[in-house]
Amino acid sequence: MAKVCVPLAEGFEEIEAISLIDVMRRGGIEVIVAGVDKDLVTGANGITVKADTDIKEVKADDLDMVVLPGGWGGTHILAENETVQQLLREMKEKEKIVGAICAAPFALKQAGVLNDRYTCYPSVEEQIGTDGYTDKEKVVIDGNVMTSRGPGTSICFGLAIVRKLVGEDVYEQLKGGLLADYC
Amino acid sequence: MAKVCVPLAEGFEEIEAISLIDVMRRGGIEVIVAGVDKDLVTGANGITVKADTDIKEVKADDLDMVVLPGGWGGTHILAENETVQQLLREMKEKEKIVGAICAAPFALKQAGVLNDRYTCYPSVEEQIGTDGYTDKEKVVIDGNVMTSRGPGTSICFGLAIVRKLVGEDVYEQLKGGLLADYC
Image (tube, rainbow over all chains, first blue to last red; front, side, top):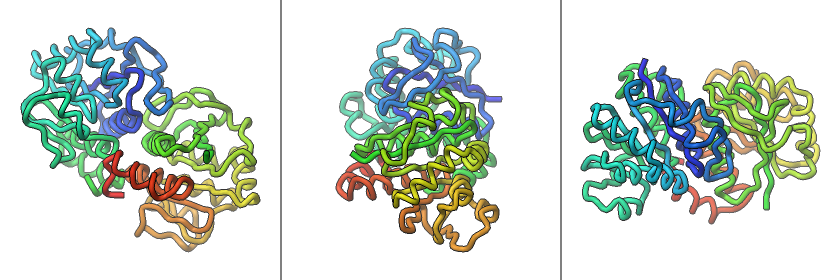
């Protein structure tokens, strides 16, 4: 079973985090919700979610992917937290997958693990400051880096991760079951 | 400021609950997340969310709307819990708005507050057992009853509630900000 870690830092965007966790678990992926220095983590819109473990307990060797939800507050913490940044660098070194949505590709950039082609929330590309941004796709896959755009694309991003880690059949079945025909 | 209650019962569908709360709060609605006999409530996909209050503390007089997330486990509790059912009946008596998504229109039916035209998750209409079901719209509004279909339509449902309770300008702005052009 594929294993993915979703780090949750105070100020995370709730639709993005929950859609990713929900869709991946529906797709048969083992998802570890890892609190960044908190057990009960409150998102950008005041919704508090309980983490499964602390980010310090998470090891790159045990994972297939780390994917970051957006929200500016959460993204700044993910971009500055040494445990998260080290985990992202180890994932890259071990040729595993990293992903981020909305503002959070900025935290991938900070870790030096963002590849050339990517997407993110409109205007965040200015802060990322590299070429290769596109707003033409809901999900961009460049090698081992997957990125997406915002709350409205988060189910599609979860589905794209399921397609990559689990396969086309489960992806198609899940897309129908979620009523996400726009993905 | 419009005030909406989202009851959370064990087994609720996480994308639906969180998308509704998140989108309504972004739209300037005061949202009360009310646990049904629990403070920390775990959804159908193992995500635990902290409630703001207990459903017993919620009064129809203080609210403009009650909206139910789906998930079969949560829906059965909402359909059988007397506090929730009484709240729904009081909302109808006071000519306030009730809403539900996915399996949860079944809980509206149990309370006797579902109007003629409605939508729900495919096949749930068989258990609801009344005419007036449609699968042609993401969101159906019939008088004071709003219904929607599933995880993939939950952002659109939140936006439709914002349009009804807050107005067209905020709806349009929010839809763009969420990158939910498919709604």
